[in-house]
Length: 456
Image 1 (cartoon, rainbow, N blue to C red):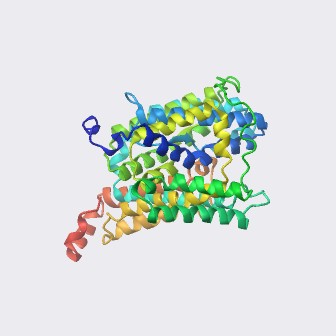
Image 2 (cartoon, one colour):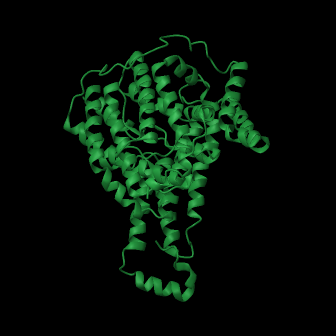
Image 3 (cartoon, rainbow, N blue to C red):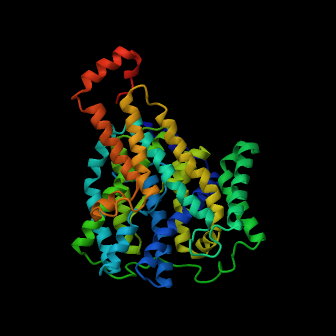
């Protein structure tokens, strides 16, 4: 069934090189801030030098490009062939810093990533078989919390990205983000169909130009440093394999597999294409293969970037070849750091202004999916309510699970993981566990015979 859909599904549409480059670059701008955040935080957290952190960022860009190409183009058993952008997973950041801060070397982090990624490849088929437990009531809740969980990222970008900076939350930062957002809204309101699809890219360019005119952006260092940097294989040393670090990263792997499964289902909803268990398995294996190779370049675990799911939703550009082009651009940026420095010079508030729309659109996609659920069935209402409420816990109180074992803290670090686990378990309890269902069904039929269509 999957192979028969290749010629008709929206993700297989070919738009031509010009559009691929334009829309692909829009994807790069959307995810660039999040892509460099993880290596930057880890590098600072474990005390690496600025030079080494720079190498980490360059390696992360290159590997993200290669991983995106694998995910979008794919080959047998690897790659979902969906418009999914890959990048360094932030879910592993806390565990990697913990390993590096508790006596482990950077090489032990890389070794743990390699082994846990192979573990992920092995268990990927199991995750692919749970797709039948992801009806709209589950996928809608997950997609909605993905968007909601990303909104704090956009807020931090709007305020400047660095809480310790003097201009954190300044009028200039808020104003720059507002101008970017307003320009995006105006393009969406008054622009042609082509302009509307490019609204995010054009608004970011507009915001960057305004920032430069008013002295809020510094592009003077773009030309500093090497213009070409070839990959330095094992430049950080040979990976070291230590069991405590490996076990810690295996837990993270489960979290990443859960989140990538949710992202694959989300993009399937947005693109309106079939995402079956075989496709999910192919996507997860690509995720883990990229992660297993990443340490050779000095990069970390890879995952689907959910902010780009929002870009697909808002632009309506569903072609996987657009995203593959974005992967190619990332590879070039990884080999030509000068372009990376150019994009990195775009002020965070500009990205934040556009991010509000991007991330919000992901949440709206989840709400649209949840509209298919019949809420006259009380258990459905409870499933959605509890799942979303649980997913908000890490956002409202990041220290909520601080007394729990480290494994629980790692698993529940992300509201996406909590919502996914809660929604699946509650759906199983209410709609698949038959004990008590007969009484509830009889009562439902008595009250309203039309309400049984969405029980599962």
